[in-house]
Length: 71
Image 1 (cartoon, one colour):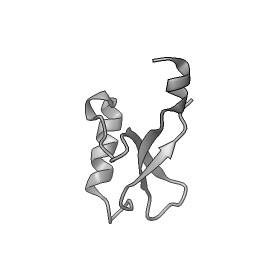
Image 2 (cartoon, one colour):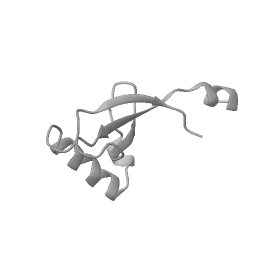
Image 3 (tube, rainbow, N blue to C red):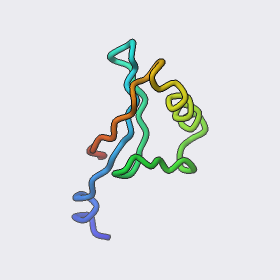
């Protein structure tokens, strides 16, 4: 795959926004449907991802899937 093809790829992240602190959120790389490649996350990121999912509605808002520009 050439560099021109890589530059045109859209990357996504799933973002869990804090319900109590506007500046706090957790985000993780995912596909366009929000599927996270769990095995590719670090141990800390896996822990944070599972935690955010477990506390949706109590500490974090429902996740949003966002297109992002990775450099």
